[in-house]
Amino acid sequence: MSGARSRRSSVASAVLAVAVLALPACSGADAQERSATAPSSSAAPSPEPVEPAVISTVPPLDTVDVAPVTPLRVLAGHGRLTEVTVTDADGTAVPGTLDAAGSAWVTDADLAYGTTYAVTAVAVDAAGTEARKTGSIATVSPRTLTRATVFPSAGTGTVGVGQPISVTFDEDVTDRAAVERRLQVTSTPAVPGSWSWLSDRTVHYRPEQYWPADTHVAVDVDLYGVDVGAGIRGQESEHVEFDVGHKRVAVVDASELVLRLYVDDQLVKTMPTSLGKNSSPTPTGTYVVMQQSREYTMRSASYGVPLDAPGGYETPVEYASRLSNSGIFVHGAPWSVGDQGRRNVSHGCLNVSVANAGWFYENFGRGDLVEVTGAGGRLDVTDGFGDWNAGWAEWQGGSALVRPAG
Image 1 (cartoon, rainbow, N blue to C red):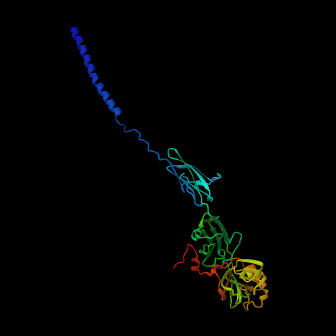
Image 2 (image 1 turned 45 degrees about the vertical axis):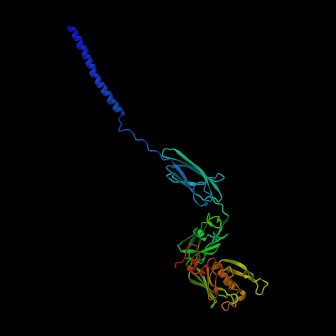
Image 3 (image 1 turned 90 degrees about the vertical axis):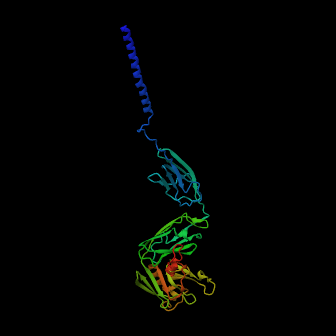
């Protein structure tokens, strides 16, 4: 009897123990499940999206009639350029420079007229993903080209203080302002000056006063690619440098007929002269020596009088220094030595003895000045280098860019 109670007691105890143990087991499973589903504060954030690289060009691809001096720029946004190739129709590569950041590539040289250029560019974004762009641009094909001739030119040598700068075009310039913006004169010492258009094909430059002695002058005619109007563009650019020497000025008054020659404002020589007679007076004004010939034949036909007409002539002379396109010279005239210093008998030239003409020929030259007063009407600004016969305001008025005050 007692043994049976003892067995029932043991079984009850075991059942109770199992029940007690089962309760914590269910409770523990809920806690683990809640723990597994709860968010963790230490989890890594999602990565930001990478902006893809974008390639563009200036001018845009497929642009035509591009001016050949317009730099081609290839640009990368949200990335950096790894490759840029620009080639012409023959496959020749155009040189260019990539900036340090890899964001911009720019051509280093002018392009050619009438040419299509193939463009290929590759860029990568921050993740290393490539973007590629291809296309082309085409430059303008001008109706024709114009060339500029600059004087003084390379090899001219030292010139006098009166020498203007002349730029002559072989086609008419209808957009003078566009051309003048591409003309630059730099002098040492610095001397302000102005361009002035004498015609549709000729523009000259001079300071307000004569150049200072011993000035160095550089001229840039950046004409290539410039639209001068009417479908005409500049063929090429020019750079010229020249030096101005001593100040040499010859002065004559028609009432006195003595040619006085000054070097650096010091009188160095006087010469009796004969100017133009009443029927062919020497124009009053400031002349610039244009060129010189050891021997030269004077022809009346040069100013419209045929050799076989009344007053026609052909006369060889020595030591001829040209002062104008209209035929004014300083030259040797042995036939008029008796008149020199006394009366005017020439056809407009400054007659001097052969010896004096030789001295002038040897000691004066291109760009030096001859000032004539009290003679005929004013020398025309467009006659040779008659530039100094315009007042400063009048001269500036011939510029397409500068207008005198007032």
